[in-house]
Image (cartoon, rainbow, N blue to C red; front, side, top):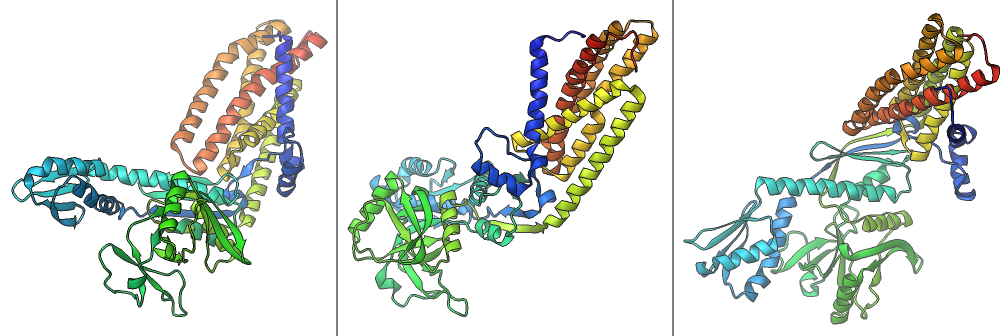
Length: 531
């Protein structure tokens, strides 16, 4: 235990120096300076800082609920719309096609064709539970509880991913987006001080579709009017002074092209006004080209979340798979619409249950209080170690400095988010970091009292205390890992700093302090140990 190979010495020194170098930006630069340097300095230079959580730098906090009430009905409606063409192709006669509550129903003219009809319905949606009344020929398709639960669960997972894409488009750093319960999503965006914009971005489903306009039926269209079969009545996004839609459109129900085929959307200008340019993928581009080629002179409605943004005339075929969306947009509205289209449509609407804005002043007070607590704790530990163990206490205090540097460096490199409980974890690490040294030094004292020589006492002290140190720190590390795996929000922040602190304190206590002790022992060759 009193011998170090050269490669071990180099490795320990290198890790300590790297810890100091990568922790330095958190002390040397303020946050704005670090951001500017990241863009101007070479990539290999350390300029990353620890990300501060919502409680330390302020920001926006929203709790959202996924409104999945209409998901099952939408799936059933999609299956209903796909049935006519398939049943006609199979030459299966039917009547009374539609929805009955949460069930798809239609009646066969010839009940002997039930097997073929069931096969077609299963191809339309494999999750449907299908029953057939052999006497009346009525076919009924429903989703059982398991299928409905899977639909809801998939909707929440997909919503989280799309929310993450939309928030990332804002250019924020380390947002916290996680699931809570069965149907809720927690969104925390540190440092973003425009909660209304976040609410607007997340409050839109952003379901984009293109429909042909029925110009004949649209003349004089208004709310509540009866529309022909295969048509839908959709209001314009433009509003009158009283808040009513300025125009109503009668559209073909069939979706010609959808936003699922978009590969790019961005805000730009056309004739001096902000617009959104878009580009389809190969399949969408072909459908869009065919659509515009076959309907030159007609009108194409661009529908976003059941509102017509614009309905331009098709003057010529658009074969490039791209186009623009015009409307009465400001530049920010065009930018946000492009963000929504790039991120994709939500599978279900989101409802804001809770919204909070945390000011940066509260975070500054928390940081200041955390710094004071850390400094007091550090000074108290150093004084205690020096008074109790003299020169060895000084060595342990130096190792404690490198321990803190390694913790900060690890948080910076991992771009982990530091929260107020995380600061508590660092303060706790300061106290725990010297535990290993206390065990070792007390063991060395016992060996000296038993008459061992300095080298033998130090060797025996480290060897016999090592098992106890590893066991105690390993059990705490297991608790930290479980807190991270099963906890949420601030609990995870505490677990991260605690776990990193445990690993770094074991390295500092066992390796760094021992290297200093062994170096001192070999150079001075003392006859007694000042401990």
